Image (tube, rainbow, N blue to C red; front, side, top):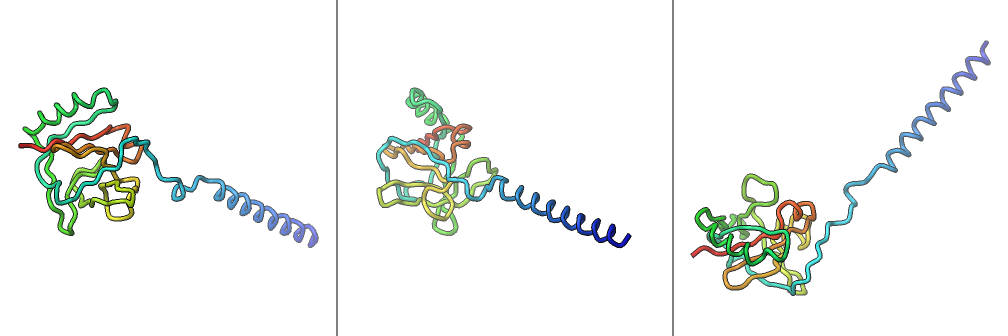
Length: 164
């Protein structure tokens, strides 16, 4: 009888080891969300520079999903000055703007890259998923594209036109 007990204990230990091994293996095969590559966006526009000091003020805001709608959207943004999008100075040298899916504005910063691109987003290196890249800034018109492709699909290309 003692051998039966020893044998069953040995089998129990083996079973525990197998269960632990299977659990660890499952952990290693689960998707690792922290190492996913950052989202990318294809932007054919040349690098555009903008300074954060140029952005505070009232802006008409509209967006489009297809390039053919750009001119119409710029007109719609001008018409939106009756209910302007307000960009103000932030408390730490940035500017206050809304991030995607946020109810309150956050302080964001204009971040420049060595090749001359401007990104608008939270502190940190340019090109983070919460950033927008500036694709156009002339004649009181600012055009930005969200880097996160899911956000870009929902919000489209953002067109800001400075209100008079």
